[in-house]
Image (cartoon, rainbow, N blue to C red; front, side, top):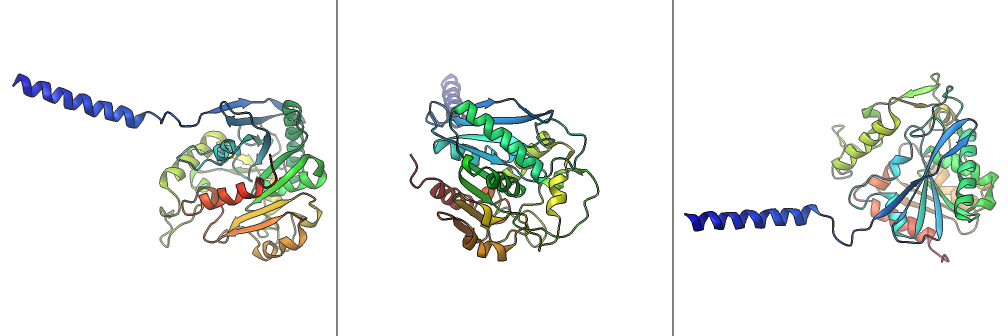
Length: 318
């Protein structure tokens, strides 16, 4: 009996040891440095942060600009290898994120219509200037997602000397449909945060497209950082007829990547198909079959997205 108890003890000890091995991160798992850089413009505190690979010495900077409802936390869903922020950091970047005035961790605004596309472009200008002062580098790469493509483009057109390469991910080139936006603030909900994920015939978020854990983390982060309300200035800008151009591609003077899925309900694909004719030399248009608006978190497509993005940012770079 005593020998049996001892045997069971060693089996239990072995099991606990194995569980500890599973729970602990791999010894070679990358670690990251995170810093916040306080910034203010027009009397509003702006949240600007930076992520880089711990122990690295990034020689490149990239600034990510968010969409019309939720803020820059969306670029860093830390699950498996999905995070765009950590992917870029592993590829040698200092990855900067900005929350436009009234969004996320930036200061509140009294008038939700004030942070429209042109106003947001000036917030980007303030962030780019701060990044240059911090790093001593006068140019960076710039990536906008959704409404962030409108704001990033308008900044780039005005300040081409500050941008080396521009990425327009899921670009809102034209109005998404005429709709009168009368409320200065958008009422955010858990359901709204999940609206951009692809669904099956029954209206359920398709698990073969998006891992349910990603959906949960994405929505939880939206609720945590963006809470119940976000400014509607950008939404009022883009909720116009599809005939209204929001991004003047012919005025962009730096190499530009347009990247999107072919199943995104917000995009004007006729303009995307002709975009290469308007963009400068060195530009590309990449359309990923099957992908939608949250392409960077869709299981069948996110690696393709990351690879095409990396390939565009890498040629001729040191």
